[in-house]
Each structure stands twice: as C-alpha cells, then as structure tokens.
Length: 64
Image (cartoon, rainbow, N blue to C red):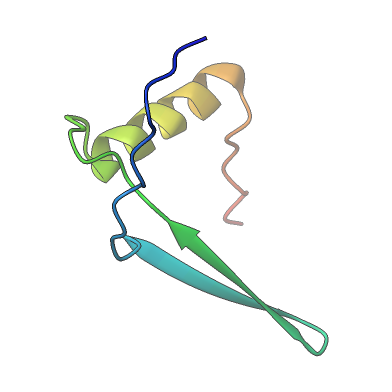
C-alpha cells in the first residue's frame, strides 16, 4: 500500500447530460469523455456499425 495523499479530483462540467423521465422520476446521467482521447465519436460509431454488420445484427427492413 502507498501512503501518498490522494488529490481531490478536478471538478469539471460534464461533456454530455441526458435526462430520462420514468413515471414521476427524472433520472439525470452525466457523461465524461477522456481528455486525451485520439478517437472521435464518429470513429467509435463507425466501428460499432462495422461490428454489428459483421455479426449480422444490423438488418435492413424490406422496403416493399
């Protein structure tokens, strides 16, 4: 175990805030992104779509 004193986390505004209403309750979810991230949100979404397409989870509905 280390005896180093822990620093208090730096307070910052959340990067995204989502509110969801469930009955008479409102749930608030705060999201934080890594400050030194190199991958963009678009990169992550493209990777998620590619993974879904590879597994067959992504299906197109019949247009007729």
